[in-house]
Length: 171
Image (cartoon, rainbow, N blue to C red; front, side):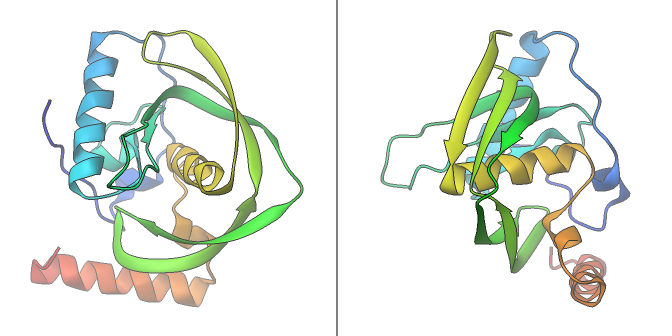
């Protein structure tokens, strides 16, 4: 396994729509392993392939606390097929938008269809923080960042600060 570089907004590659994965093969499994290593090292609780410069529909998620046994999800071609009308607000951050957080409203529970690391079709019903995290990562696959849920003014302030920090070499 190896750590990958995480793209930082406003990198234009983060705004692209990721392509479906035709076959879950060793290359995709290796990508998921590398993404998990990268996510844990960051540290974070979710990572989408576009965030590491791979424009494919792959995400990894693990919301286990540091003192708990890891419980990673590896998802290929994930799709939310149902979402509750009940909403929750979570203070979200993102490895591609370091050091910035904002409240985002999302469905409290979702049903996700995806392929696991063996290529088998799976259906997962989740709620709470896990639902929020999976929904956040799936949005990355469509070129959406959590800051896109904010007002234009707030989003632009954050993106300008990130550009300035990138130019200064602090991120």
